[in-house]
Length: 223
Ligand SMILES: [Zn+2]
Ligand SMILES: [Zn+2]
Image (cartoon, rainbow, N blue to C red; front, side):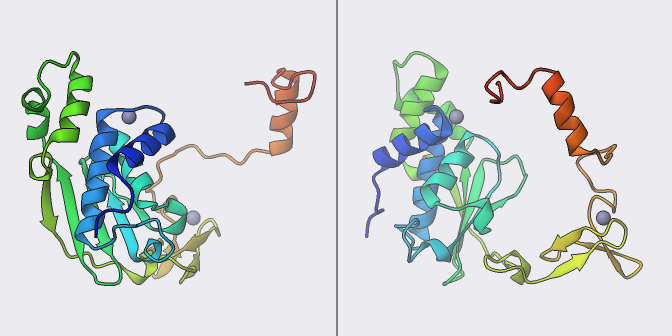
């Protein structure tokens, strides 16, 4: 069985959603098509296959959007796992069979762009065309991997809820840290990406906005 949708269709859809056509779209579309094919899910967005697929995306770059589009994985469905490694790679896991492959975009492919698409002006344009033509084993390294997905990371209903012993925030899916045998949310445990959090009254903020003229005469929010 071949991949349900064609490369050209997927590339055009993905570029539209992403906002532009770029070498990353080509890499991401091909990475996702290869990854899904290797685990036997060649129509990943279909009703039947969408529940079987989990994708771990290791970069928040252009290619990540393309992988998400082709596979249909979503943060809100817990089928997209963002692993902040800064590596141009993604792992495709078939939940039904347990089969998983990690596809890594090679650095060599960048150097070979000139060979596969000679005479094209501009590095980006040349890479874009070359990445369409390169064989999979030049564009990617592939690893068969074992992914031990935890019950708490699976799609479906929340399996565990805890209350932070310091700020009383509800913590879902076993993300708490245990300190002195009590659950603590990660921000309270000192692992927050923000600092200097102060509760503010929304009412006063919005009123201030009005006098600052962020609302125009028709009451619409001005950009
Ligand atoms: Zn892009
Ligand atoms: Zn807390």
